[in-house]
Image 1: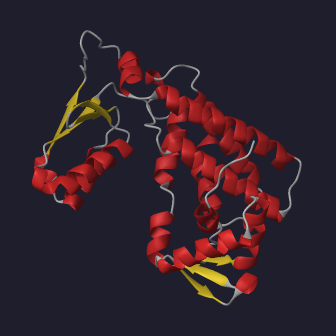
Image 2 (image 1 turned 45 degrees about the horizontal axis):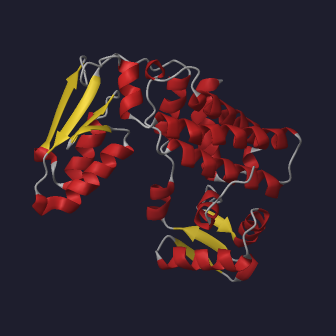
Length: 280
């Protein structure tokens, strides 16, 4: 099964611990993914223009260096990944409390209002009514931090409840299926599971360094595509067995297989390997 990987993702995924990318290796991996040299050159040019990389040298002998600001922005949230796997392993039980956030940001601060709404959804919140969102997770610090950054904290209200009801429906699992697009989330994880199965077979058969990096980049791209829109609901709120748990377990096995050759892998994949330590 082929995986669609943006050229930018390939460049960022190949950053080593010292913040550099060897252009020769970048072109080899990109070629293995079906990308042209011209495609890579244009992407690198854009990344340099955006201030995310500098380049020393020319052509395949060049060395790209990621700027400190870009490295901080590109690093995965390791604690988020750890929490995901802890919850999958049954180590993070839901306490039955719903966490609600309401905001009434004035029209004069519309950009900040839109940014806050986007952040709340990114944190896994589901809309109940206009300006009112809910999550089963303790997310107050995340929302407060974002609201403070946007300068709208005085317009935000926080509350919790153990008795959420929509109409006559109060079953937590039924509410979750109504509030979050679980079918769409499941479909993304179905694809992730199939991608991981194929890559796991390749890893057990042995792979060259270029193949190893290609597999790692494909896994990272598909993992991100599946996980970013996932609200990571507690297992008690999800249909069982849940495909998300199965898919992420397969990916963890891939990281484990890749981890046996961690000295050959860029920094990103070492982080992923360390983040799934909970499963061992």
